[in-house]
Length: 112
Image (tube, rainbow, N blue to C red; front, side):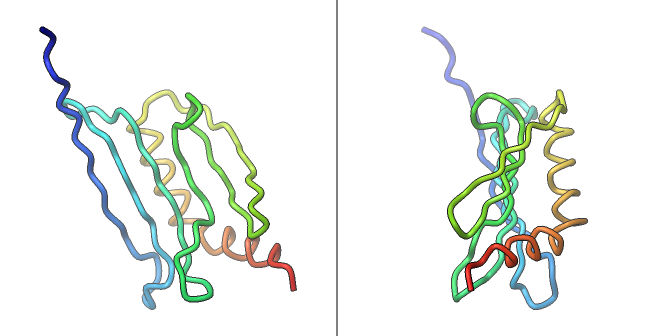
């Protein structure tokens, strides 16, 4: 009988603005202190609901950023970072630095 892997899931969120209308949602799966999987998502409170705008994850077998648009379209960009710990730090810092840009781009795509 093999050992059961102790995969621990950590989830938390951080607000990016003082009005608490912009947030970072983070989910990390860790095994023996090592990041095994992660999702870092920027959400904005639009039309009375939390709306995902940018997501970093490792779905499809590689680290990438998905820019999400009101139409349902997604723009996927592969990012070449070898360690998931570095990828996690990169994703969080990018969203903290650029969330206003991402929101403006999303808002421009809303059909009037």
